[in-house]
Length: 157
View 1 (cartoon, one colour):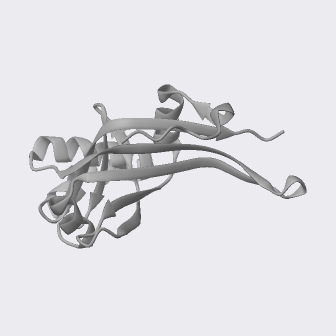
View 2 (tube, rainbow, N blue to C red):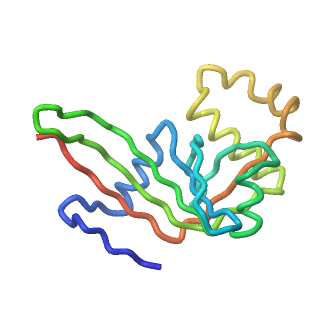
View 3 (cartoon, one colour):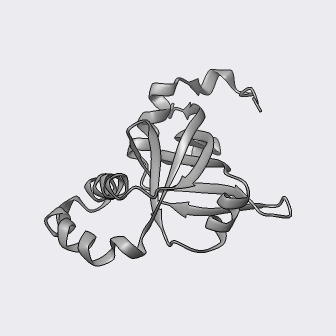
């Protein structure tokens, strides 16, 4: 399903969108409930090997939704700055449409967790091996295979 961007003057390319994904501290992950209603939750994503990964509990609402319908959306924003004198906000954003799945392969899980730690816990990377040994079995990794990605920016003037 393709939805053209209304504000073409703010549209940015795939490279821009991937940079936003790589720099954003968190994103909002959206799935579809069994009754067709939306469900979204914040996650801490990382881009690696052409896919988006985030960690989560191995059970729960989003996991049930992914199993029923793997079509998902991820929205990232960065560089958000209020411009009160103009009643607006400057920002950079990307929206990813794709298919989600849980990662079963242990090597891929560890690779994704290492990338997540490098992004979000770099000051504690020395404890990575110990933490993997302690918590890998109870940590799930969700992988989003990107089908479409869009970027958008409103610059501060």
